[in-house]
Length: 267
Image 1 (tube, rainbow, N blue to C red):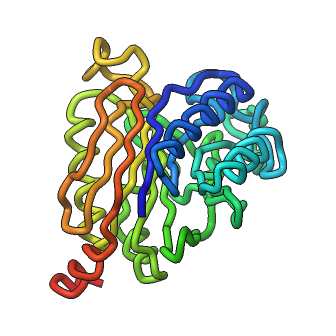
Image 2 (cartoon, rainbow, N blue to C red; image 1 turned 45 degrees about the horizontal axis):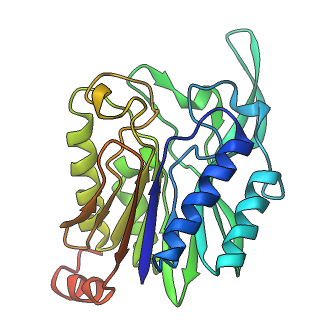
Image 3 (tube, one colour; image 1 turned 60 degrees about the vertical axis):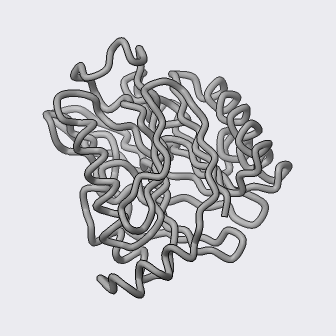
């Protein structure tokens, strides 16, 4: 199965971000990708304003716009967006929380996975503005079962093992990773570890680093570190982007999953 990763830098405007995503979708599809993965927060980057003001349901402009493009091209797309969730009180303030959703859309599918594990770490509290999801999601592309996780989920091996037990051979991971000391090292380690835990292909699409390589290694919020990657079921890194916007297209050998599970039956 040929997959594509579109590593981009989204901004504050949902309409402009949709146009950016559709352009990337067309470029990856033109190279033969059947499953094309975008970063977390593709619809609106973190740290660009209140998420609830542009949050949309799956029948909104962003999701339907990407669906129309994916249907036209005959591909399946996965992209991070935000949906309205609930209203909570925090420190005397009323906050309209959202779901951090990975949209899955294409000719035969249109659904969302709501991120299970909110990023409450490194002095950041995603749960203040984002409501956690409640269930796992898998979908089918050309007869292959694909699971979904988002960013901070990658620190929780049981989720990836549960997706594999549900039939997933490939797990896509839209991400907007934080930069800073040891963060790239952790990202590389975790993506390889989750591939080994689940004996799946890991297809992780990250936001490019704002400011590019010139800002690399400096502490930042969860706005992207680049380094989107494809990791095989034995933990080998088959492709990796840098800090800048980039498109990766790679043909996954699904027989490697069968071989890995026969020789390393960790599930």
